[in-house]
Amino acid sequence: MRGFPSVLTMNSNHARLCPSPEWAEHIQRDILPMLTRDVSLGEAMLEIGPGPGAATGWLAGKVSKLIAVEIDADAARLLADRYAGTNVEVVTGSATELDYPADSFDSAGCFTMLHHVRTAELQNAILAEALRVLRPGGFLIGSDSLASDDLHHFHADDTYNPIEPASLLTRLQTLGFAPITVMVTDSLLFIAGKPAEQRGCGAR
Image 1 (cartoon, rainbow, N blue to C red):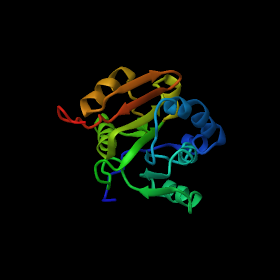
Image 2: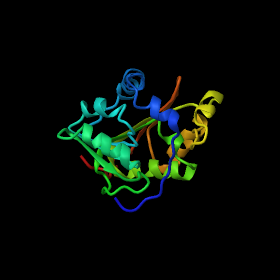
Image 3: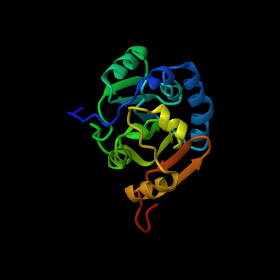
Image 4: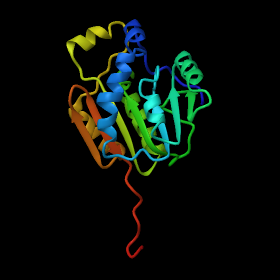
């Protein structure tokens, strides 16, 4: 990875919650099955911002190759040690500037990390890079926390930039994703496809 700016910060509350078995159970029981129910992850997947890996093991069991890009060097090192010798490759870097060619992955995912990204522009850069490296017909699946007073207090002294659900559809459309599904439950969930290649008239 090239040099990159720090695009997120997290406070000590996350050091307790994010690595916990309870959080991993929530992601794997309530989030991932819903996002993947009607979507094929294919063979090669990119996970953006895995942190302590609440989703990583579950995803690795669904694909042949999982590349996890994590901006925090300490978190990346711990995750790399945890999955050494498996089908998971952990890379330290920023998802705003990925070192992968276009059309490299069958699927991509980001889970409860976008609200840690400082600005909407950087969030959009991450989403745009995910679109670029997806193969035509591939899907980005994702989740994020919904804005609330409790969540605002939980993020005291760190980056807190929640995505407004009503704006997400337009943002994804503007970047070039289609089709797009945005769901609001206890969390914000989305599935965004990279359009399949169009064949010319008369093509078989």
